[in-house]
Length: 127
Image 1 (cartoon, helix red, strand yellow):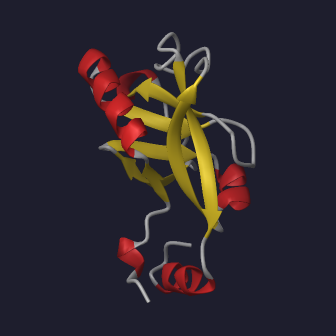
Image 2 (tube, helix red, strand yellow):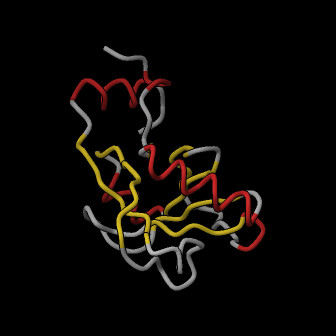
């Protein structure tokens, strides 16, 4: 069984990491906030860190390519059994998300944690 600190709640594909790098070069430090939606295909929103106020109760799932990734506590209840995989697909980004106008958008995919991963996350106080 993997140690809980090694179990990522959110990770990024190489395509997403490359886009994050390009956006960081233009906009400086970034952060992500998962937009509404409780299923695969929901759009994570990318913002300059100084332009988005994270809520006091928002949950930080981790970081992707050095950018913190958050979601609301109520939405976390939908997603807590899953690992989020942030990818990039063709299309238009969210109106206020930094990738808007790039011809691509961030996309959230997911997979369910195994029972063993959930137990390890619980034991580490991360679930």
